[in-house]
Amino acid sequence: MLHSGRAPELLTKRSLVAVSHAIESAALATAEDGPLLVIALFQRMPYFDRERAVYERIAATAAAAVVGVVGQRPEALPAGVCGVALDETEDLAREWSVVALTPRFGAALVAYDRVEVEPAATLESGRLFDGRWGFRRDEALHEVVRLRDLLADRLPGAVRLAVEETLARVRDLPATPGEARGEAALRLMFSRAERAARARRPGGRDRSAGMPPAEPAPLLDEPGMRRWTGADGVTASGTLPVALVGVRVDEPAGAPERFGRRSAAREAQAVIGAVTAPLRPVDRAVRLSEQEYLLILPALTEDQAMTVAGQVHEAVAGLARSYPFVAFAVHAAVTVTGRRPLPVGDVRHAVGWAAREGVPVARLAPESAEVPVGQP
Image (cartoon, rainbow, N blue to C red; front, side, top):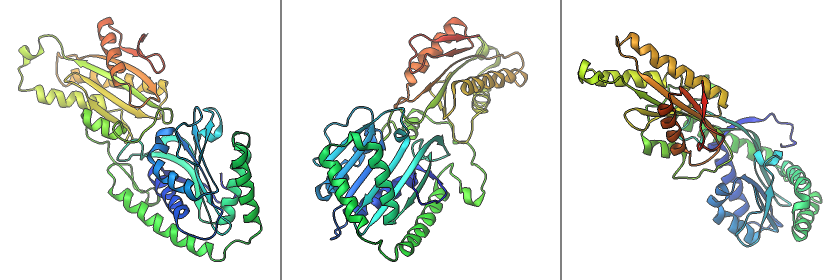
């Protein structure tokens, strides 16, 4: 984290994207204050791929441009970009960092993934981080030194030399007067833009204003689920864990003949209300078919998801008191996954297995549903 002594801020991914782009734009600005050094940690390769063209331009003018992602050493990077592999277990794997440094300029964003979300337009944009950012050269200098020490043995000799030469030039010159004034203006514009964005965002809230959380979003269809989970946009496996609860609700045999179809719509709404009753504002529900539902629960553990499945069972069972003599059969399957796109097909397969075997709730093996495990 930054060595400025500032308290960490709670930042959403939307906020981090805005600050990251501001730092990258500053790095690309034409100026005679080189050499330029840029270090960025992207967590996963798909996030870097979105910014590939920007870093190709940065590398064309920088003394060194270093990009870190989790997994194997990044391949097919733009010319001049040095790729660094981060191990899944090291702290840097959860960092989103962008640092730009020249002898006369510096800016740094360092954020640590909380593995949490808040209500937002998409699952990705609501991800939460603890972080600090600023446009002060000496703070950026401290961050470059920190990252240099942590990445030293993973940097090629030519890149290490470029980093050391840049640091030497920076240390020889005093910081530019007026940095605090410029940064104060940036922070004011950023805070106002962020507040306006929260006010416009469905399901969002302004924490500083103390507004209560919004009500859960309406039931999604499958295209809506793809949009919200980012399946057709920029998302990556291995970051935010998501609990999935597949639910199948079957009405009793002969119910349509005995009670008629005029009450079908009312019963369907009652079932939807029971299935979605345990949801938090950050959760979503998807109707996959007339009988099947999928609950998407970000940042919950498997045990917490099992509790939700139990609450759904209880809520649906309680409908018998509203519709006398009608007891719906409920079967569910639970898993926690870091995969993107979400393994919806695996969960549906497990729910079908649970219904055939008469298992109330099936636990899927981690990241796989090939062999569901019965939960009595």
